[in-house]
Structure formats: C-alpha cells, structure tokens
Image 1 (cartoon, rainbow, N blue to C red):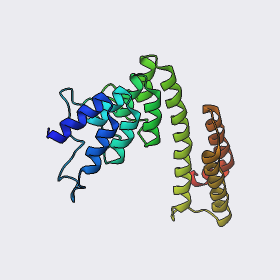
Image 2 (tube, rainbow, N blue to C red; image 1 turned 60 degrees about the vertical axis):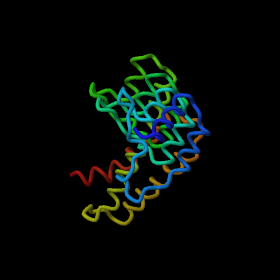
Image 3 (tube, rainbow, N blue to C red; image 1 turned 45 degrees about the vertical axis):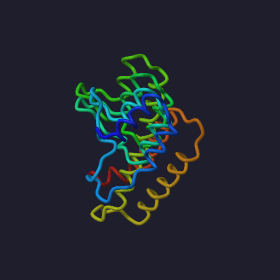
Image 4 (cartoon, rainbow, N blue to C red; image 1 turned 90 degrees about the horizontal axis):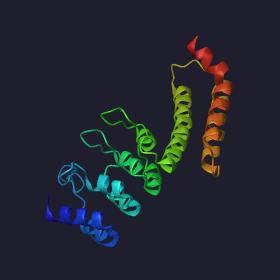
Length: 208
C-alpha cells in the first residue's frame, strides 16, 4: 500500500472528508486504468477504502470515493459488497447513498445472501424497508427495459400500433417513476401489474 493509499484509509477511518478530498483532487488521472488503482488496495481484512467507509456509515466519503473512480459494486473474496456492509451494520443513509450510486441490490455473498437478507438477519429494519423499496423500483425498471428491448427487436413481429401502445406505456411509467413522491412497494407492484395486464395480449402473441 502506497503512502497516499494509507492516508486515504486514515481519512476513511477518522471520517476526515476534507483531507480525503484534497488527496483525491490532487491525484492526476492515469492514462490507463491499470496504471494506478488508488482504490484497489485492501486492509488486513480484505476491505477496500470504499468497503470500509460503507461499513462505518461514512456516506459523504462513500460518494466522494465513487465520484473519483471507486467501484461501487466491488465485492470481497467472500462476496460482500459495500451495500452488504452498510445494510448489515444498519447505516440506512449510507444504504440510500449507495443505491443512488447504482449499487447492485442483487449482489450475493458466498452464502447466497443479498444485502436485504443480511439486513433482515441482523434486524436492521430501516435498511430492510429501504432495500425492499429499491428492489420493487428496480423490478419495475427492469420490466420497462424488457418491454423496450422487445419493441426494438427487429425479429419481433409487432404492428406499428402495437409498438406505439408499448412506447406510450413505457413513457408513462418512466414519467411516473421520476415524478412520484414517497412511493411504496405496493405502488411499484401496482404499476408493474398494470403494465403486464395492458401488454398481455401483445406479449402473449409473441410467445405463441
């Protein structure tokens, strides 16, 4: 571990965001990704600076590290991601930060546990609620992606009107996702069910 990496770890452990920011902003961007990996070094437990910050609930530091190139979905050799560690230690604000940075809610440890599973095991109720809601949102967004891919597949025998129905519905649901305030898991489930029911005649035609 180089001296700057050691100093970065010290900043993470102490919560010294300003000094960490000075180190990060003072570092030149390498021409090649493999030239220097500031974030790849691990401590004696196999945790990177980002994993350590997540475990400690240092949300602002987590955001700063990812902004400068730390990999939000990096996992330890046993499969623990930053989202796993923030969830099992009950740092709900850090969980929200990681979700905002597109952390993978479906990442699994060597035991096959997702972040929400760890939060449940350690009775971190706020983290469970946050992750269940994020999974419901992701489920709806994944279905939107599926429908859009179906529309754009040239081998799919859809009429112009059928494509327009799918496009209008996708646009409507995307607008809903971005405009809804304080949605619940049930809200996301209802939106997906509405999409499935509306598109059922079209999609069943494709599978027949």
